Length: 396
Image (cartoon, rainbow, N blue to C red; front, top):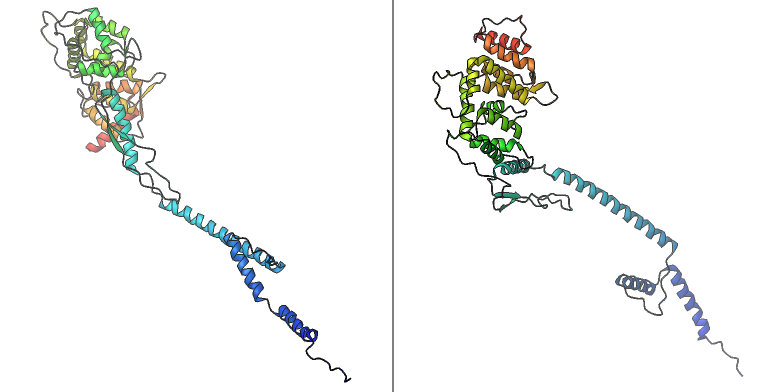
């Protein structure tokens, strides 16, 4: 038999180089199928889909994990820096763009407070300005919205508490009656403080009696009733004062204080003839007329005690000049220049004690208006020495 030939188509021999070639190819370059499957898996994981069954998941190498951590850290740092810059920029923009409170809002608040105070006295307004809590809105981005326009609401006028109409005006020559005097007191009595006419009741009393509040008449009224506090009359003071003057109606009260103003403050002539029947008891009035200077001194010193705060020896200069303007200026025009001099030096002269108060009256009564007989070495207060020096210097 012929010898057997060696077969060249041995599948094992032919397969060896092929497997070696494929193994070498896998080691030198990544498989396209593996790369494709990895990309598909990533896409499915991002979309929430599960990987296909039978496909082994791609293993991550240490290098890939390290790279991912580095990338994540860098991304976080970038985000943190970006957030910090954004926050800082936003804060700066907020404070730079925040407008200050508008002056009109402050003025409006204040005007509203004033209106509320006045309305509690006269109940004359019927319009109320209402501001909501959303007038100023702070937005998240750091900007402030403009204040909303105040809403105007028409309201009915408030009902005052125990506001009584003025008492009927009795004839001037109505005889005195203690009961009527007591009833008149009750018309102005303070609802919160029994047996007392407070400041509001005192103002209504003067208004109904046509007694001007900006002159000396309220001071004369307080003097005649012997009150201890300004714009306040107790039941006992009212009872004693009206009984002494025999007054139980407003016209008689007005006449009594006006007569004293004419004689003591305005320095008018004393009536030469007496009426056959007086509207009120003028016994005290005629006594004042016998010595007008001493009577005015009593009124003048009473006013200092009336306005002086308790436990204090002084009155503020603003109050002192206001009283001097109604008590002294009508008789002594030079006092108007003294008041103007004090007003030009508000930081120097801030208060008046009893000595200055009394010496100011003596200055007006004894020194000539041209200051020719003023003695600088006398015991005059420093204020008057300075005024006289200023006055003479301005004349020269």
